[in-house]
Image 1 (cartoon, rainbow, N blue to C red):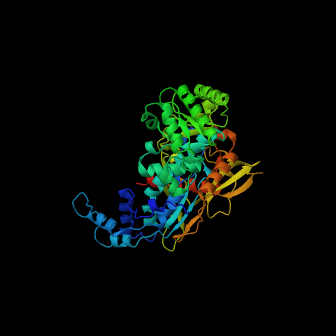
Image 2 (cartoon, rainbow, N blue to C red):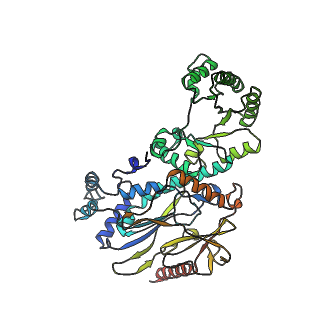
Image 3 (cartoon, one colour):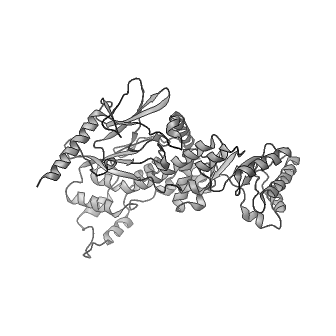
Length: 493
């Protein structure tokens, strides 16, 4: 079976945008700039979760959105109905809506493959396209990439804390709506989760689905033991018993009785699930009781508001938990609700002209954008990622000396480092998809390998070291010149 997100993103979603994308596109068209080309980058300025990295995710949705980009007749009728503050049509009937009726993506799009570890201020995506087209993509790209990258990063952190134990994503019921729950389940799998409770995500993406019973099953019967027995009879190949409905240790004793009955029939109790209380102490007592009963192969599953910090602490306490069910705090990125990605113009090209750099200034240095058409090159030392460098695509390789992004007065020495190649790869060329999408398990494996090669000091949860980021000498000179020119224009009367 071929799994795809197309049922979610394959319809006409051109209006999945903020109004100002369309008013700007109209303005470009009216100003005779529809044939100008522009370069935009999707970046984020701060690494999530107080960490030093993120995991790129969401490109599959971007591909589906861009491939299907068009304005339907209903879309155009709706736009024609919009009115300005004076009550007249917002978009004059002078050909713009006809222009939109024929609009499809005709540009180039490069992106970091999903599952790649990246850091703040590196582009996730670079768009080079006719100016109105590139502008219209902004909101959709941000909503697709921001959320999924955030969740994949959270899942990677949770999976690192679990240290090889399976992590199950249980967050659909707390997710931010239907699409939030579906895209979150896929992003969590990319970040390292073993499976999901979300059956629709399982169908769409081929993610393993897991689940047994909730407290309501036990409460529907007169007593817990009867509830356990009936479920084991109904689904003997899927028996994980939730033991904390009334009293956890009593629940463990009842589960042991069911486990013995299953074993006598040539079947087995897969596990018990703890969902409340002191998980460290209860898991130790449960493990002792199960082992004494000869049920040494029965796993202990834990849930209950888990995240990377809770799992790491339970590991530190020696809790014999083997499977982790993580819900709310993963599904909604509980401790950071948004990635904060931005979409900034970096260059324009007039018809028949050359690329001209553009820059956004700010009183906050971190918000000053980098001009040009940015590529990222990664370097390694002794098998570990060592530094990434930003440079313009017109440079064969980053020009030296490489400037420290965060400390422009310093340089970064690349001598002796292994060149690991470019991070942004071609996805669309001339509006045509040229990227062969990997299978989801391959993306997850890429994430695991990327995290393995990330230095431990950068990966850790507490006070991680920043991942080094450099800028080519030429790009730094271009940035400084753009700043000088922009400020000079401000001083003109």
